[in-house]
Image (cartoon, rainbow, N blue to C red; front, side):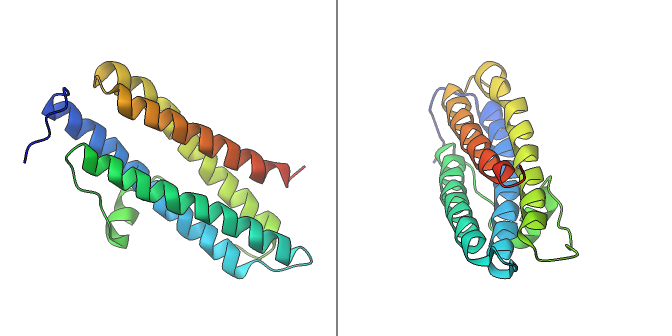
Amino acid sequence: MKTSIGIKNENLAKVAEVLVTTLADEFVLYTKTRKAHWNVEGPDFYNKHLFFEAQYGQLDDIIDDLAERIRTLGHYAPATLREYLALTHLSEHHLESNDSLAYIRELLSDHESIIIHLRENIENFAVEFRDSGTSDYITGLLETHEKMAWMLRSHLK
């Protein structure tokens, strides 16, 4: 059934295209944060293990909400690793060590990349595509990533 919510179909498709890429970024970041949670080592292991767990929990909620936003707009959310890797802006790196600071630097860089991508699209959603709902949603998502990045950045001071 066709989605009829006051936004042109071609605009819904363009919005969904950006959201699908964002979903791929979120899933890759989630996976990298899980890796940090599982593999972190060092004298701060326990605290960082719990810290990374809290962060991947937030990302899990983001992924679900984002996929549901895509469906709300009448499009399908990608759900395979192959699709995510083809769509993401992020890259996977093999870290030289499993210390918390190496993971934190990498995850912080990814959050900042997502923040920039989101910020670049907020106005497009509202003005060009006439979708203030997605613009508002993305603004909230941006704020969540800014806070998560701040939490990561605070460990590097």
